[in-house]
Length: 252
Image (cartoon, rainbow, N blue to C red; front, side):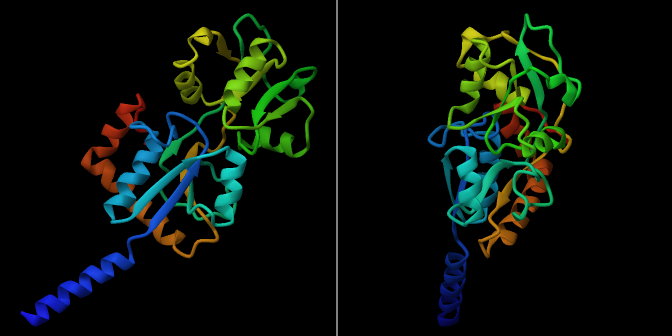
């Protein structure tokens, strides 16, 4: 009996030692990452919580602007960042299995006849982007060159700013994921059916991740849990349940 008690205590202690408080961050990018104090915090947030909390950890999720989320996760203030492409988080620890997918298009007001084909077609135009987002190599390279045709906007409501700036013609258009734009426009009905796509998909790397801090010694462990957990969620059907809540289909 004594041995059994000691064994149980040892197992309890071991379990407690491995139960971490894992802080995750993102900006508001529904349906991928939404309000933190919501029953619908975003499908990538729910995936991370189900997997990590299923392993005994506690997940704390915070929404801040994207540039700050990347910076503070890199230094270790947050353990991970949600909704990142590989280009967003160079040097971070990534799961081998993505937890989301991405596409990016140029959007303009419906009565605008302009369309994007290549860099030359930007001449004389002002196109809005969100600070520190990666949109794909084609755009990212021009941002690095400080192409004046791209106007960078920051803040927690950056996409709302881009929508309104385009509406009043301070911008000719903006670049965004259609899932994100259409989700946001549910709360901005005055702009429903206001915009149209005028480009090919410019996101050359569609994979999105819960990316973990290069400063956290447990990042590889967390990344492996996400990779294994995604496979289990797919097999069990739980992934489909989470995605359907947000009107999203499995991309695999």
